[in-house]
Amino acid sequence: MEPLFLPLNCDFTAYHVLLPMQGKEFSFSVHNIPRDKASLQHAMLECNEELRTILRGVEPVVQERLKQSYDLSTFVLELKDILERIVRTQPFVSLPTPAFYSQLCANLDSVGWEHLIWLSDELSSLHLRIFDSAGREHIVLVDLPPGFPEVAPTASANLPIPVDLRSLQGESLKDIILQYESAIETYQDFWDVMEDVDKRVWVMEPDHPSRADAFRRIALGGHCSLSIVVDPLSPRSVPECRFFGSDAVISPLRRRLNSGLRKWDRSRPLIANFEEVLEITFPSAQETDKEDMSADCGICYAYRAQDDALCSDVGTLQGSVPDRVCDNPNCARPFHNTCLLEWLRSITTTRQSFDVLFGHCPYCSHPIAVKSTHG
Image 1: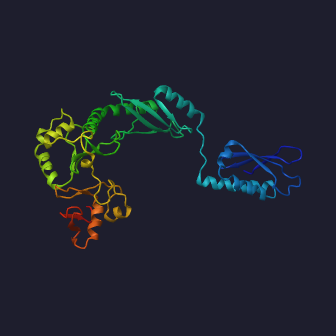
Image 2: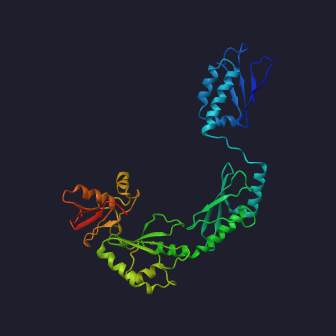
Image 3: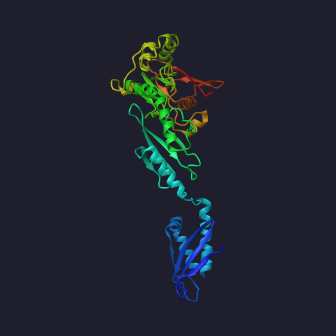
């Protein structure tokens, strides 16, 4: 369709223009057009709020095109070109239908407005709050498609296992809340167990555990640690375990764990079971010197590796934590595998056999070896 020019006065010095494009119709006005229509150098452009928002950031370009245009038709073509360029990078967003708003309000009435804690300006997403039987707060993030409720919404929450949404009585927000309430109650024992772990021991990782985290790295002291992954559906069973530290310290712990699992009692807290099986007492953050708990790399003095080149060189992930420890129990310094590898490569006395480098600890000169690749 062609643009429509509507004169606003008898002198034809002002026009209201309707510009159809891609199923939309943009309207604007141009004033101070000279009677001879020889130039728009002194013309003024007035846009409605929608068009002003679209053109935000390119106003100088629009004004320059207006001043350089010889007549109104030329400028309209220039403006159309600008709008088409914007559309290619930022497509126009269609507003929801009136039925969308009424259905959304009806759904929130059904859920209860007390559950709503945030709603986006575009009404395309919202956050719903749920409290479980222990009083923990959970936030469900819901994305509403333009075709809601005919098109089902999507949702997510901070849970150890994502909820597989299934329709109960339709595709309503009430259905989503019911399914998340059911899932949340499933993990009550899991969160009780993890909160007890966080309270009793020194957790090295993650720094700020979320309710989705089933992993904990627990400090054992002497630069040694225990990594556990708890089963969210069976949190009191024996978790996946991995020890980090000097072989002189962690080898006996591995043997005790393998031979003492018969002592594991699911009625006891997880940490109490570990202390019984491993025959140790875990140090707590409140009663232990931080220097003894530290696992910063003895070469780069950081906890997480940050060197992209080193990490890509040996196939490890950026941000890896120290995963190699000096086997001398009087030293037991931790190192990033990448840092130790580069250190050994820089020492002329280092020898290599296949993919293993053999050298000495930078601190105590105790023999130490590191693989040049991870497999």
